[in-house]
Amino acid sequence: MRRLAPQTEEAVRARIGYFRDLGIFDFYRRDCASGETSLADEPELELAAEEAAPESPTMPRAAGPVPSLSILEERGAPVAPKDKTAALEAIREELRDCQRCPLAKLGRHTIVFGDGDANARLMFVGEGPGADEDAQGLPFVGRAGQLLNNMIAAMGLKREEVYIANIVKCRPPQNRVPEPEEAHTCSPFLFRQIDVIRPEVIVALGSTAATYLLGAKSPLAGLRGRVHSFHGSKLIVTYHPAYLLRDPNQKKAAWADLQIAMRELGLKKSS
Ligand code: URA
Image (cartoon, rainbow, N blue to C red):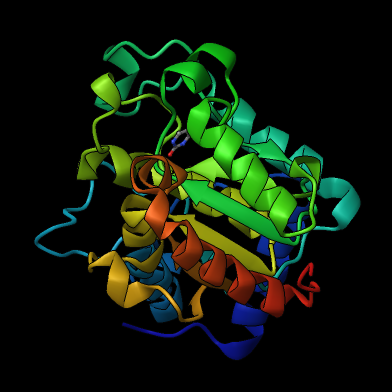
């Protein structure tokens, strides 16, 4: 693989950053005539795309193309706070009546894009919409959502101050876990939302969120209690609120995880 000349690389980065500021996020690769170096030859770009969805026996990659060539994963081109809402809307607009994965035809009524402050310092990522979310088009509005609201309030924050989204934006039938193909097809849109919002801290709610944000499946117990990273944000893993509703004994452990998030955000513990 040939590298771009340093000045060309710099110019390409600047140009992509400029397009990103305009709300344009998709870049498609085109083969160049021999002797020229294409974006596809850029090792860092290929690595970034691989990192978004690594191949593993438990997480097969989706068959189709990755929706965006994510040079943006390097976070080289910040979006100005005033432009973040527009940048998120551009992603929402691109999804339209999404038919990219099987969930589109498995009974979903609404695409649950995500909700909250585009400039949030804290973001929560769940698994996928349930029946209430599918009906209302908003994440975490059912029983698990009420518990999440309480968790957010316990941190001293308002729901409107954080951003909430899911690994998949359409309801899996019978609330089953999203299939790898569905998660790999949908999650790049979530990653782009994260790249726009750039939260300081992301809290992964449950195993599905942790698996697809960290790029590997591992037992939740081994992931909790530590600070991971995702696209430059600190990533903390905790139990899914639906699991806490089934096993309230784990709420204490979840609160310990949220306190790690609070520490990273410099939020004071309430007495
Ligand atoms: N469970 C999730 O993972 N996400 C929601 O939005 C609601 C319930």
